[in-house]
Image (tube, rainbow, N blue to C red; front, side):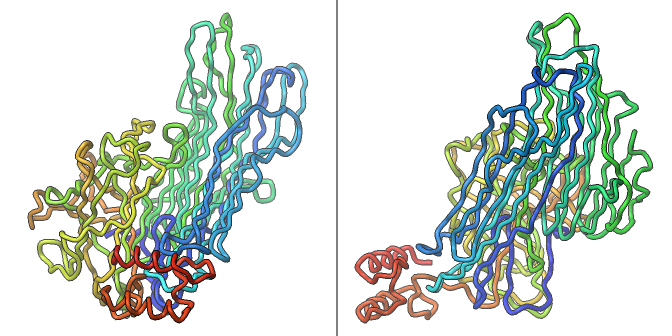
Length: 602
């Protein structure tokens, strides 16, 4: 069971379940999605062995924000999203540089999304052929989506909210081996909320024009993940502290470990927690004994962690024509996972770590399995979820994340069919209580923007992640208890077998199952390298009332000619409910719109 990304709501007028970027709220409460604010910024002091006139600076940013009502909400609740990714040389001078202005978007009434990447240079001091630069690199964002203002009944009441921002400043200069390079790096950030990721790399690149060889030296790499709390590294009274309140989190800092950074300045600090308990503490080198934490401790902690100071010695031939580029970057991502989530999972494991800065999903640490086979009639995958005590919920939507080997992202999604069954016990032993393997429930397939990769090959783009939205309309209510969701897919025959993605953040309660040949014999899904159990990454949506169907105009639970007659009768009397395109005018276009939905059915 995928525990660490799942929450139970004990009391509420309506059940709301979340997937990455998606939130469903059924019954009287309309769709709502919120991205908690994230603020990732880094104070830096950089001593460059060059005069200001010999230093170039380049800024790159990546902003992506969206707040939208989903496709079942038409005019007045339209999609509104934007993204930017660019860079260009900027004057090397003191001052704040914000690239670009905040992305701020509005879609459905009361919905918004905004994020911003920001870079500032606070001071430049030159003396003795060295230049000291201080400043800040920052990324922040927030978003909220509601369906307020969608007056017409809709089958699915949910919105989408997403924010991601990163900023990077690249300094370049011709290197003089007589002078050293110095860096002080303090990550002063607050990333909190249901699930957020941040990635903070500092990389030195040596370009040897004489030999034609370019070499990258990662100086500092910090990755974080937290769910349900706040993870913060920042100064307090001039002293740095790392603190955490999230029950599920990761802080992974790697300094040096290569030819550019001496062993005396290198080290690893890795802390992970799952479900409120510290599950891993790894401290080496400069971080040895830093935290005072042990496996089994509670996940809330605070300890001193000052700025990271480095004096790297870059391997350079002084007789060669050499340029050094130093990249200072950082960014964050936020997705809505409210406390009401019953089953929710994000496939992302790292931001900006793939080809051209793409987000990636990689197996956790010592794991190696990339996907669980899920091809209709060949191999199916399943995992369990709980309906909270005291509730009886109608399934509405499930979102799974899949890929096909070799499918190019430029061609768009390749999954054409998705089938689901719900069991009241482990598949093969329990009984199917909802769904079948005949009805294609695929409602939407979209490119996630990320790739499923092996940790050793993060730039691989042969497995683009497809978010598959399955419509569970018509399934009966599920009373309190544990159920199993079975998934089977149909993909384009030109590419590899469809695979669903395991959770990138494993839990001791993971117990996904797989079968072969469409048989009723199920085996535990186990990572082939670590031999640890795997969990299926999916998000389950439900509500306390049955989801509505647009075409069921008379709300009798069926779509037939009676709905068409009811619509025409209401349209003839200029009933506001027949303003199908929500443009404020009742005309023939509304009839055409209704006919299209009626023909599509539910």
